[in-house]
Length: 144
Length: 388
Image (cartoon, rainbow over all chains, first blue to last red; front, top):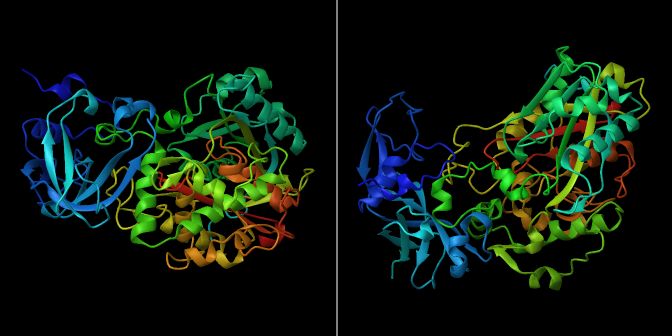
């Protein structure tokens, strides 16, 4: 059995993040770490621009961090119409202290009160669904 | 100072009307032909003699399609600048380089779009190159992605809502006097602005640019040739393109300038190449896909700091003829119309000629900035002959 996201592949941008989606579909948050200089390379890329290595180790990262920024979408945009019934919904950019401040995105779930830049959040890994274009996703919840 | 400083000048401008998106009575390619022929006529140049064609982003009206209808005698240079709206001023860089290096003598820089011939602008801008990281998480439009930057600009760096409002009001204030502006009849009172529907927080409707059908063109020739033509030349003093380390395709991982426009080093290079600084600028056409990004652009260009943004960005300071920095004097991307920013260059030229409908008296240095927050961007300073 292949991975769901591989059967619904979104083409665009750098396209070196298969390892991220594979791990997420397996229920883990992993980001790539350069095997040469040990730096976190995020977004994932094909070569480490710092040391020149072509090899990365997909490494577990604790799904917790702080809100770097966010937007509450109040309109159903063309290519994300799967979420039209969820409007308004909040998408966060979350800074991960466990990966040297790398930032990942995700939708906010649960009580939205107290949402602010710098707020602590914990991630829940969700399996692929139509809403997430058959990709796995992280939903973030404000830590109370 | 670079060899490019003042080597080429804009000598012709041409524009079609702005149509509501999807309502252009003519297809995209025909709009491009209209803008190019109008610019040639404005310059007093035989349109058949244009030998260079430059555009940017996802432009589809390429030189091979245009040539038969223009009667082009010889096309010797044709190129796109790679990225999105950030590429706008860089088209002048490319055109000037082609002229300076002898690859072309008369270069048309243009952009044409009609939704009926292609797709929604916000899709065309993204060029189907938005990564799964965004789409899986409900982010599609540039409006949403730039809203992330704006939230940071306002909440973390403290730029007040009043600054966004002032840029919108200044744009529509200028649009009111411009008979070609699509938004000329819209009055943005504080109430109209505050009550407009939210698009993606913190952006309300009037914080966002319009999507229009239309085309615009400017024609460049060498400084020497410009002297003999009928219009007052607008010289290209500097038009650098680029991104520094920490920018580029980094999916919200930009460091250290996340909340501004990614134009800091670019603007510094432009000041160095031109020999001028922010205090010398008479008038600015600031690319506003979204107004907060334009504020980020002005910060990157050194007009004011995060802390000074609220004090600087007031209606009085941003309007012609006497504001500290009149911006978007045709109405700009918000009030005039938006064809991927291309309306900004003709207006920057009109300011130097003195033919803007909102003229800044005796304007000599006229700035036009590229799409802020683009993965790569550019900026250009145009000057009258006295500035050379």
